[in-house]
Length: 187
Image (cartoon, rainbow, N blue to C red; front, side, top):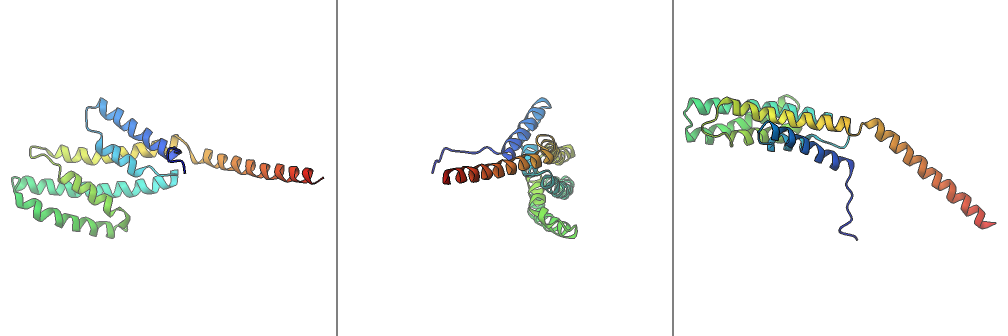
């Protein structure tokens, strides 16, 4: 067992690339890259189809979680940041979020949606405006879009199919060569 032998696969490379591009863009717009970078990591999958399936789940779950965060923000503002509002309203909104996901037949998005909601709701500064909440929601969309773009253009599935076909031909050619060598050795 060689502990230091590692394999950096294409998905690993693409994930790192997506995070790097998010960080570059957010550096130039002078905004924190945590949310979109995390969203890109969550959304990027091994194939284009899997990325699109998971991106759809992330976008729906983020819309639900973000919508709930906006509701929370509005109630918090209406009650002048009363302490009790967080203790009472956040659990109720989590339950509502779960119900909404189930009604949308998106139970796979419950964890992501509630994570988005809690991350936004529990980090809203007291002096924040609604722009803060909306920008956090948009950050997740940006991260997912980076994952989609990277997975589509960094290595399209068509190239993967060709690579697999080439590997299969190479494997079959090695078998044929081994058989020929074996027959020659028997003579």
